[in-house]
Length: 172
Image (cartoon, rainbow, N blue to C red; front, side, top):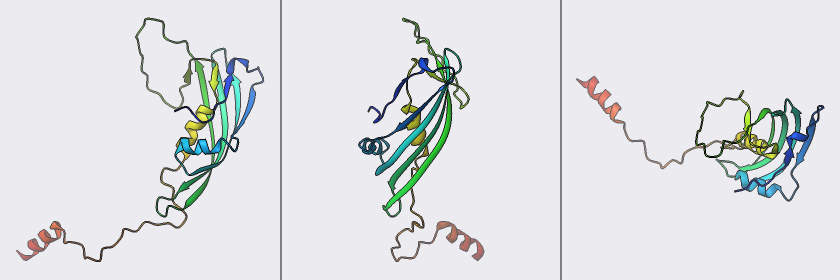
């Protein structure tokens, strides 16, 4: 499934002073974003990105993202509105694709400090925003004051086998 929002940017066009890009979802794009994240509603989505060219093959992205989401409470199923504000940075490293006919795949452990490898300077700026937002959305939203209490069936709980053994041990 294609992302509901895209903003392709040519990183090679970044000047020495850098570049600033603002991305704001239009009202007609918000329902598609909500469906993408499998939430009840997306009320707002906005991000400000600062781009810098570190070299011909390395770029740095600083982002500030804000989103207002509505999810169903896992206890009451009522709406839970959440404001998400997230700041993050990424270093992008332009790599050339594998040589034709070569099947060598090198797997290295990834960590937060390693640059993200990209195959082209035409980069979708929304992709990292969607990734970070997906990590920020609460998978189990709970309305304020909502607490789960299991239904009672009116029966007393069965005596555990360990309680029976303990009683037998005392009796001997």
